[in-house]
Length: 293
Image (cartoon, rainbow, N blue to C red):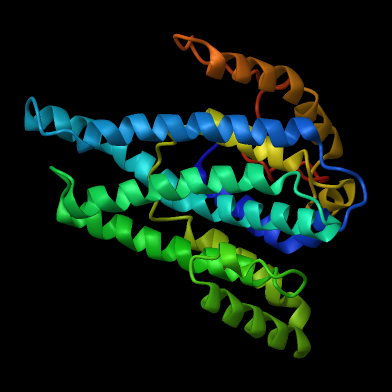
């Protein structure tokens, strides 16, 4: 799964987040566990890749240029996927606060803290890293700014129901977005505001990201874990096939246990290979609608 699909998932969560927060049933424990596990493994992969870039230049410049596309893809993944991490953390925090509990917020915050640390390493490398072209640094910095702005826009949709602007890149900007969305909803045709926002979100990340997806397997696991926590009515709203969701959900327990075993192994064994659902994996998390699209 490419990082742009995680961005689209963040837009879906922001749109239908209240359904999650206000649900009466507890969240699927296996889904929360898989989210934490897959996220931690991805953080570890990011750290190892960025560590190699931070080392002094060795070997030929040709070799370094050959490995740059993969490293650049990791940086893009870190910067763009932070949108989903922040939105999901905001929703899980709102879920706990709605119930006066402290069950899932610590898990989400732990992942977010690790993600922010990875982002800081990226920015440090862009500013001081050896062998990074100025053009590449400028392009990645633009991606950072675009991701921050969209994060604030999506989280700004949530304070209408719950105060979670602390998870925005710029809390005040998120509040400004919230005020703007509320005003637009009061205008004639205001019900079309959010579909236009989500369409703009997809268009904003359709270009500007490389084709490589260095952690496609873990991105898919993270998306699956989040989807497993959504109530059934949310799937009706976003048009996902209920059967496809149940098929993914049935694999969560076994795959999570395998991933935990790999994390705790010493020395680490080869990470478990994800299993594909019957008929092959879907090309997009939202690509299976009730009309077979």
